[in-house]
Length: 310
Length: 268
Image 1: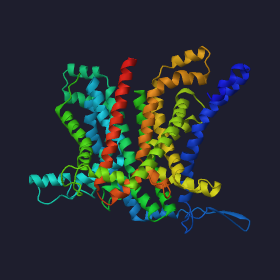
Image 2 (image 1 turned 30 degrees about the vertical axis):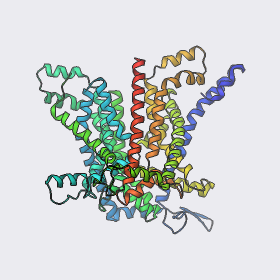
Image 3 (image 1 turned 135 degrees about the horizontal axis):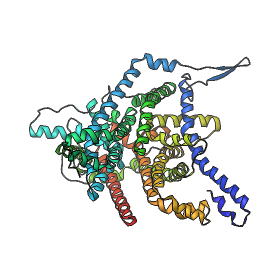
Image 4 (image 1 turned 45 degrees about the vertical axis):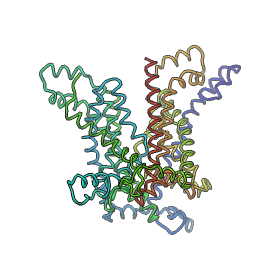
């Protein structure tokens, strides 16, 4: 399947076959090579630097191997990982990240499920328009949408102005730079990721089951709890993981909306790298974050293959 | 058809308000005369004028557009090849590796992608002497890598929906694989390729975190400039910028969706 295979019309058939076979290798090889170099290899580099020692140099770490008296010496510095465990900053930022990602996922599910359900139950033109309305914010700038919340939540922002104008409150409520604002920002930016897999799942739901259930006298709530909800579990898992996984590593939302104490791992990694210029510790944080994500990613893949099969 | 309950519909309306209220407030306050973004001082378009006079924003926007165009185009080729390999090439060694490498960037936290690519570039520079300078090229490489994953997902789903028997028929009639690809497969998946390219373009245009890691001096992208402005507080010209971007993207999405829907109707 390469360009070379086109020139073979006058050549012997065997040669053409050779071209075709190697064209196949070329087509496989090109993306393989690209991803191998620019996606897979970087992780080995990160691992290497996470076990090296910080130095005042360019680049700011020491090489792992050295040559002394005819001996090759390999130095693996596990101190960076030990530091992560011993310094309470890292442990607490891990726990904060998990807590914020977890509750954001719950809120996104509570808001997203009804939306996906209503869209899946609407028909024709209406369904397409609703779907487009869900997708549209996803296409517009993420950074600017987070920024929009600053104008809404800050002390003289839209909400406080409105509440003070109506006389409900006398002094502005502090919403910016709190965990609350971080939750709002994360739920807001990742809501489409929750809705779309749920919608895909609910749209495929066999409606005859629902009719049968109501014919047999079940009330709508009973039908929902015993049929719709259990059947939509793969969609719930897929949507939840698509919110949870990126939320764990989120940097922009806690930085713009969260307070100084809203420490999430993504933010810690950023400041370790850009402010402290401690590349080994930043790499160790990245490695630890990857370990944390293995389980949710596996769960997501299982849910997705279930969705495809079911 | 089962009627949806009142509570469900109520939450849905609430959800859409939640999705659109911030965007709406951005647009409204971009026409605000007052510098205090949220205090209404009368209708004005002066922030748009201010924006168009800001050389920093303009040059960053130009860099971002060039990067987005280049990386979306490379990502389209590589992502389509990957999808083709995964859907049409059957079993081969390392198939699972390729599958894993193309889906992982979708869920990889941006800080990790950014950090790991930067460290790769640093190591490559000390080993190979390339890239001697970080900037346009390194950002394009980084963006291509994560955008091609999105391209592959879109093209993969289109390819697996496609009727394979037409390709087989062409092959049986003696067409070479390359001919089959350009005459049959490519025209069939063309709408998916358009939306994949557009998605890659917007993802690249939007990226802050990865670009911050792999960029160098003099190659600040638009999100990087906006981020440094926004960090200092709300500024009205950012609202104007947001309105322009939302308007352009909204229009593009509406047109693209209408075209796609029309094509689907024709196909039926």
